[in-house]
Length: 365
Image (cartoon, rainbow, N blue to C red):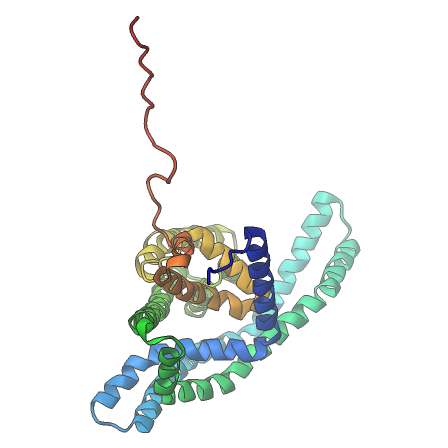
C-alpha cells in the first residue's frame, strides 16, 4: 500500500503545534524538569569517577556514595573559601555603607548643581524606580529560593540516576528497533562525552577567569579582590548581564574605598582585556571546541532558555542544544538541522557557482 504524502503546509502546521505543546509542557513542569536536568548533567559528569571505583571491585552502592562524597567535599571547600571572604567583607560593611552614603549625597549635589535637578526630585525618582522594580526583585528572589531548593533535591536525583543508570540505558536500547542499536549506542556515547567535555570546559574557563580577575584586582589594590574576582568569574557564565555586573562590582568597590578615578579606569581596562582573552582564546579553545555550536544559535538558545526556565534555562540551553545536534547528525532526515546548529561554515552553497562567469562566445558567421 503506497504511503500517503501530505502537503508541506499541513506537515509544517502539525510540527509547529507539536513544538508549541512541547514548550508549554516544559514550562508547566519546570519545577520537576529543571532539577532533573541538572541532576542528569551532574550524574554524567560524575559517572567516570564512579565507574573507576566499580572497576576496583568496590560495590556499586559504595562507589556512588564515595563519588558523591568527593563531589560534596570539593563543593564544600569552594563554599568555605567564599564564606571566609564574605565574612571579611561583612566586617567592613558598616564602613562601606557610610562611605557609599556620603558618595551618594555628593553625587546628588553634583547632579543638582550641573543639571538643575533638585535633590528632593532625585529622591522621588529613585523611590519610584525602586517601587517599580519590586516585582522584578520578588521574581529574582523566587528564582534564588528555587535554586537553593535544588541543593536538597539534586543530590537525591544524582544518586538515583547513577544507581539506575543500567536500567535507563537499557530502556533507550529497547525502545528502538534492534537494527538501530549501533546508532543509539553512538548517540548515547557522544552525548555523554559532549556533556562531560562542556561542563569540564566551563569549570576550567571559570577557574582561569577567576585567577585573572583576582590577580588584576589585587594588583590594582581593590579591596576584597579575590571575592569579587571569583564572583565575576561565576557571573561570566551568564551572557550579557553577567559580564556587566562582573565589571560593575569592582568599579563600585573601588569608588567606595578609594579616592580619585584612576583605579576604576584600571579595573575597566583590565576587565576588558580579560574579556578579550576569554572570548577569543579561552572559550573557542576550551568550551566551543567541546560543544560545536555556532555563535548565532548559541545566543538564540540562551535567550530562549531564559524565557522558558529563567536563570536555570540559560545554563542548560547550550548542553541541551548540543545533545540535539548529536541526535540530528545521526538521523538522515534531520542532518540539515544538525549542520545548521554546527559551527562548520561551508565555502560555497548549493545551487550557486562562485567565480567569474564565462562570457558567451558568439558564432562566427
